[in-house]
Length: 204
Image (cartoon, rainbow, N blue to C red; front, side, top):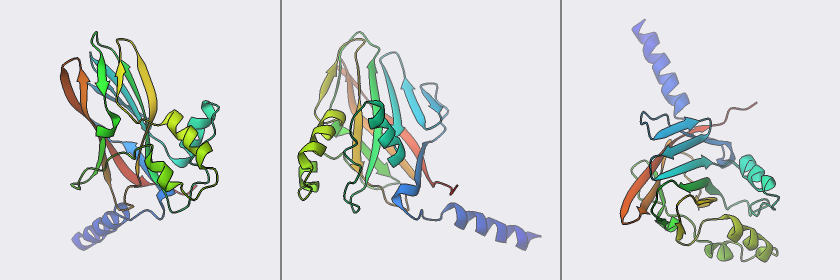
C-alpha cells in the first residue's frame, strides 16, 4: 500500500511539473489569495482600496487578438517573427482617491520564482525587434497606441487602460509575480503585487 502511494505521488509530481510544449500553450491564471483588497474572477485579478482600483489580466495570443478586435484595431503582434514571444498583461488603473496618482509603468517588473526582476519592453525597443519587418511603421503605430510607455498622471476619477509587455517567461516557470512598483498617491507610494500560477492549457 505504501509503495503504491509513493508511486502515485511521483506520478502526480512529475505530471504537475511537466514543462509546457510551447509558449502558446501556457495558461497564466491568477493565484487565489486571501486578502480583502484582491478579487479573482476567472482570468482577471482586481486590486481595490480607497485610493485605487487596478484590474490585471494576462492575455494569451487568442485573448490578445480579441483585445484588439474589441477596439477595432489591427493586432500588431499577429504575424510577429516566430522567434519573438511576449508575456502581455492588460492593466487598467482607476483613481478612487482625491489626490492625483502618478505611475511610471517602466518601473513594473515580473518575477519568475526567485529570479531577478524582468522589466517591461520599452516601446522604442520594438523598432529594433521589427527592424527587418516591412510593416514596421504600421505595427509601431498600433503598439504606441495600446502599450504603456512613459509616466502618466491620473486625476481623481480618471482611468487608464493599456498593455504591459514583457519578454516571454521561461517555459519551466510555475509562478509569476507582476509587481507594480512605486505607485504614488499624492506623496505616498505603494508596491502592488499580482500573483499568477503558470500551467499548460489542456488539449481540447
